[in-house]
Structure formats: structure tokens, C-alpha cells
Amino acid sequence: MARQTVPSLAVEKALWAEGHDVVVGMDEVGRGAWAGPISVGAAVLPRDRRVYKVRDSKMLDEAERERLFPRIAAWCSAWAVGHASQVECDELGMSAAQRLAARRALDDLGVAPDRVVLDGRWDFSGVPGTRRIVKGDASCLSISAASILAKVTRDRLMRAEAEHFPAFDFERNKGYPCPRHKAALQAWGPTSIHRRTWIFMEHLPWGGVWRPPSRQPALW
Image (tube, rainbow, N blue to C red):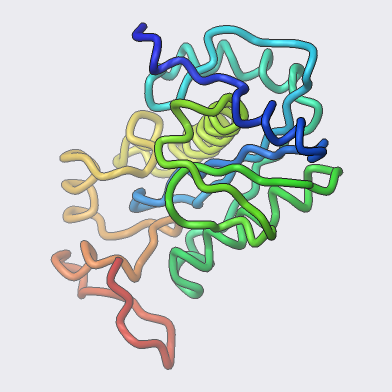
């Protein structure tokens, strides 16, 4: 593993030194999926203990994430995962749904954040003073922890849905685009957990994009 890919506590330590005791790392999963919720993880790390082998969730396979999940959950001072359902993604739009999932995660933490650090260029937390870090899930330890907590939690939800929709292979693709998912949509149409305002729906033979009443087309 290259040294630059190992996340550190450098950002958290700098914020702690400034007097921000509760530093929350946040990351999102599921924004690019065709089915299921968008989920946001939030993690508060302790100063005096460390769990090793934590990486950006995308750098770990499913078995590695599952093995790390209970260790990270026990290690965190506080953690939570918030979700916005596929219906909320359709009705609100993806950006608003992501903010809703983030707010739910923060509300469930049980502690008030002094500072939030999150992955990417867009502040979806709604917390004043949030620090945005491009590729923060690979460099900032609390964001990496949040990414694993969110990914494993959402993956478990999608595996639970798979038994209800066996043709869609949700236990493997977790609702993300792939050839089998596309073929199942073309053959059977969308399930009750699909996001029906997405542009890919326009090409399905069942009749095109479903849009809520009084809403302009939303193409993401």
C-alpha cells in the first residue's frame, strides 16, 4: 500500500489543537446508484486509540469492509449513518436528498459537532465551518471511517432487498449500474426501490421517466 493512500489524523489533530473537540468525518455512498437509498456516514474518532487498516471504502473489498465494520463501530466515540429513500431522492432531487441523509446522520450521533470534515468539494453537511477535502476519504481518517460505516450499512440494506427482487442481483451490484441490472430493468421494469426520475429510465420499454406531479424533469 503506497504511503500516500494511508489516511491519517493530521486534519483532526489540527482542529483539536484549535479547540474543536468534536470533529465529525462524513462521507456519502449511493449517489450514483439506480436503486436504494443515498446514505451518509458520520464518525467521531477518539484521540487516544487507533484502528489499523482503515482505508477509503472503495479501496477495500466487501469482505474486508465487513471485517472492519465492528472494529470501527466500537472504536468511534460516536457514529451514525443517515439515509434518504429512493422516494425522497425522486421527490427532493439528489442534492437535497444527500443533505437530508447528512442531517439525519448528524441528528443520530448524539453529540453536537464543533467541526465537520467531509469528502469532496460540496458541503452537504449544513454545519458552519465545514472543511471540504478533495479525496478526503483516502487521506482523512475520520472520513475513511465514515465511508466504511456508510458503505457496509447501505450494502446490508441492499442485500436484504435482494431476496424480494431476485432478477436484479442487488446482493452483488447494490443497486449500481451494471449489465445485468440494465437487462433486468429492460425485461421487468423498475422495482419499488428504483429511483424513477433518473434519465436511464427514458430508454426502458415500460414507458419512460416517472415524474412527481408539478415537477420539471430532473436529469442527474
